[in-house]
Image 1 (cartoon, helix red, strand yellow):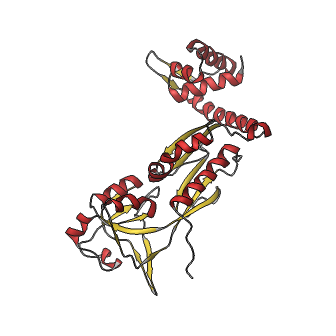
Image 2: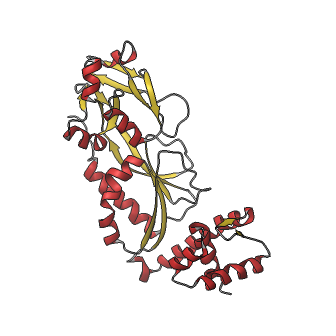
Image 3: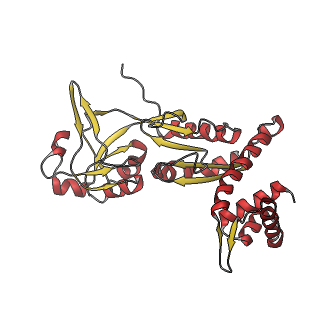
Length: 307
């Protein structure tokens, strides 16, 4: 038994949930994949998979072994790609997680160019605003907006996102155009709350105009934990919302949103790509982070300090 081949077969079965699908991705026969997994179980003297006529489920021992094997195979791939002969063409599997709007509006539309540049990188992209445990979930990196709350992570600052305040024309027709941010704290105006990966109350926003400073919490009828849902709620006229400019561009162009408080300033939102401190920064991870930096330079240009 080739243990590396057996480990790769086991990993593919777990991830596809099928011996047949695993065989297809490995370009091997189903019989060969089955034999490799059986030989691996015999070698370990542990049952890794529960097999039925309809599906394959991983056992508790198999789940624990899977997490270790995935990391082992990734380290092996990193070792191979670190060789000078291979470093010119990074390859292998890369698991990343990014906010849903960043995925749909920026990253995914640009992926054809990324794959043309790096055809041997297999990208597993998670698009969510939830908090990801990079170690337990075996994720190579995450892109997140806002200050990092986990100082143990290594991170690269990739952008500062300009923020603006917006509302749908239908909302303004019903509620009127607010003349001052503090109006959102009282009366009939509503904001859309955004919680992201944080528990508890929605975010508050600091705004300033000259020497005047306010911190807006607002009152909401709806709060969400997903950026795409947040934007959709604003376009639907459910309240006032704060958006990075890259998210607001298309709705503004289609007259779905109207800017508010344009004479007020909001501190930009820093954006980072974070990765585990123990994770080797492989060639494939390095070129992916560099690519995000390039994209954000186009979609969120650097903010020049006032003169």
